[in-house]
Each structure stands twice: as C-alpha cells, then as structure tokens.
Length: 405
Image: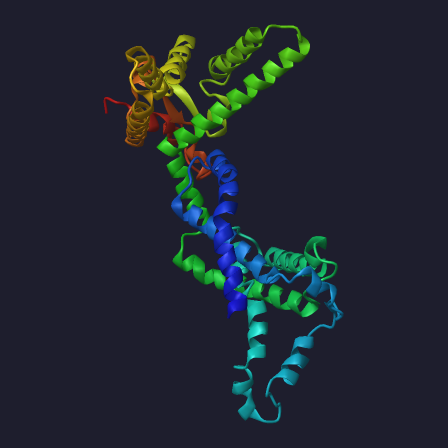
C-alpha cells in the first residue's frame, strides 16, 4: 500500500502551497461574480484541487533515478485495447470453465490495479457533474483528456526530465480511467440528493453577496491599495522617462499625487466605486443613501490612510523620539517597546476587525458620513424577480449597516 499512500501524503504536503497560490485569484473571481463565498463552495473547490494533486502524484510517483531510467530497455507503450483482460486470465487463477475460481480470481492482486485505474477517476466524474454541471458527453470528453494528459506525462519521461518514459503508456488505462469518470457521472446523481445543488450554492452566494462582510471589505481594501500603488509607481516611472532631469522629490510628489487621485477621481467617475470596489460589486454611499460629495471622499480616505491605518506607526515614531530625548538604555528599552507596540498593534487592528465584523461604522466613516453598500442585484439570482424587489437591495443592505438601526 506504500505505493498509494506515499503519493497521497505528498499531495497533502504540497496542497497548502498550491492553495495559497490559488486563493487570491479565486477569492477575487468569486467576489466579482457572486459577491460572496459560502463555506460549502470553498470546501468543494479546495477538495477538488486536493484530489487533482493526489491523482497526479499517484500517476508520477515514485520517481526513479536518472540511472535507473537510462538502463530501462522495455517498451514504453501498450497500444492493444483490452489487453488487461488477457493479463487478468494469465496473472490470476481465473478459469472460465471452473466457476469456483471466479471469486478467488477477483480478490487477487492483479485486479487491484484494474480497479485502481477505474476508481482513480470516479471522483473526477462526480465533481464534473455535481459542481461544474457537465453533461455526459462533456464528462466523457474531459475524463479522456485528463487521462490522456497523465499518460502523455508518463510517455514523455515527465516532460523530458528523464531520457525516456519510466512508466508504460497504456491504452487500457485510457479506457479504464475514462470509464471511472463515467461511473462518477452517474454516482453524482446520488451526491446531489445529499448536498445542495450547484444552482442552490449560487443562490446562497448571491444572497450573501447583497451584504458587506468584513472579509469583502478587507479584500476590497487590499485590492485598491495594490492598484493605487501600481498606478503611482507606473506614473512615477513614466514621468521620470519623460522628464529625466526632474528632481527626485518631484518624482516622489507625482507618485503620491497619483495615489491620492486614485481614491478621489475614480469614485467620482464610477458613482462611488473605486476600481477595486467596482470589481467586487461595492460602492460608497452617504448615510442618507445618496452619492457622496467630492469632499466626503477626501475626508474618508484622508482619515483612512492618514490616521486609521498608520496609527501604530505614529506610536512607534513617538516612542523612539521619547527614548532619544530621555537618553535611556536603548537596548533593553527597545525590546520592551517592541513587545508593547506589537501588542498594541495586534489589539488595535483586531478591534477594527471586530467592529467591521459587527457591521458597525468605524469613526472615519461617521466623520465622512459614508459607508459601503453592495451593488449585487437579486435579478442575478432569479430572472423572474420583479423590479421593485430588485431596486430595494441597496436600501436593505444600507439599513443593516446604519448605526442608528
């Protein structure tokens, strides 16, 4: 069993790293499309990724050494269909004329390899039909493509890493793996009786998407921070190319101005949304559900980036100045100071997180009299909804966040 457990163990080890690379684009796409990410969707998608990694490792592992592969002289392909039936008769105690050998033959080791090739693709067929809503023909086609990819991986010597294929390209594997995908397709009909359908998951996503969650706000904040930073860097570099003899301070001011204008001009042009908010189906409104004035954007983002976010940095700078003025033993005091500042920073941002999770307006939002609302429409959920219900979505979300409610 080590031949099967070792690849699965490696898949479990590699999975967190693959998941980290996948998470950021996945979160952005899901918030853009649905406005929310239900936990059941997360579980299904990430389990599918883990399955694909495990299946891949089961195909390529264990990896032989270059010397072992170089000494191989056997065939790299088996192109005779249904050869596994002949091998079954030859490698087991099965005798067609003796029924007493039937049960024993099907419990012998050779059968495990055939069953393995079928069972390996059963989950793939289940996922394709249940979550991706694939038809029978599409499931058949995609199952064949995946097993062909695996077989070509083996035939190519792991994409040329080895001088030749170290495992056999077997046409029977193509058929058995594809059969496993088809079996999974029919099993998926049972899965849909136990788990909510894909359409139901989409409905849940759209319903949750009409609300502004703390995670959605944080994703929007960091997305806007990234886009604004990239824009300011790009404009600064472009200005340096056009005016190569300009002072460094001038280039810096151009970059800072671009960063500021990102949060002032774009919301005015996009009806209260920055590029990040627009992508995530959010926008800013006033506390009386109107489009904010220009000065409200200015006040909101000045307080956010000038006070709220860098507040712990100001504390650290003030503390260092006081230490210098008092001329105290800085080595021990700095360690103590770092510990205190670390605790303050953690509890400060945790407090902000909790307030947002409770759907409470933060103080800079109250001062600027602005708040986030979702632009997700329930018409995306059900096409036959009436217009009146569609038009009340933003009002319902606003009322949920209003501090006086």
